[in-house]
Length: 297
Ligand code: URA
Image 1 (cartoon, protein in one colour):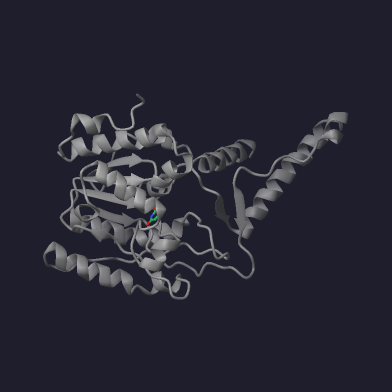
Image 2 (image 1 turned 135 degrees about the vertical axis):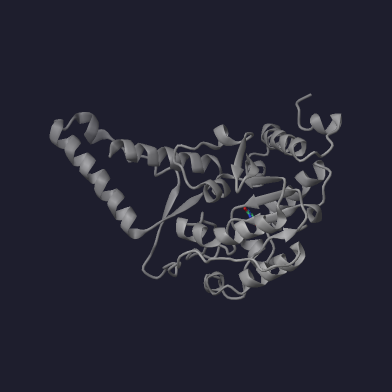
């Protein structure tokens, strides 16, 4: 149990270092955690006489990441099993339009929206070589009904500009088609496995239509959605390397919000190096000037 708790704490620390400010946790899970911690404390107290040191102990800082417990008033509506999506015959544009219509009218996606907010489907060229995959719509995206239109999105547009590309020339989608709801008006939470799994067939179908040369997963949540969660996976280890999804080369990199948070040249260069690999893989021209972007002088 101690090892599992340590793994949990290190995963929370990792998420925090990547900018996650809160994670969603079910009441029941939180209760189990409390009981496990209590059991560990009890067994320690039984095996060791109380020390002066112990009595002096001050309260420790809280967990690395706030745990947002599900309250009685806030319940995520149950998520049914993933839908089966069978694309109709037709050209790319026709199949994409069919799928877009299917997703925008999906009852489950719509059930999870706050009043007046929109389901978000992918945008861009159906003939794109590059398919950027983010995590889930945020506040701006659910208003506009378009992925990556907020601050992180503007940065993504700049990154594309550095690659010599416009937004309309690539495809931009998300793992999730709705903004994962919270009891609060602001804030985001990572999707649950059920939510990921529900939306995954929609993402797979978009990939089937676009048939890109490369998928770029932006951030740990996108990676978890595509490859499945793995508590041992570290972004620092998997980014900048080639993986595969649906037989398509998959590049993992940090989410653009990582640059917004850290603001360092190093963060920019790290993502940029991943983009240079993507450009090479997709056969895009790379100039010497581009190679040198964000290098320290
Ligand atoms: N972050 C994402 O991952 N996707 C969006 O659409 C917006 C922000």
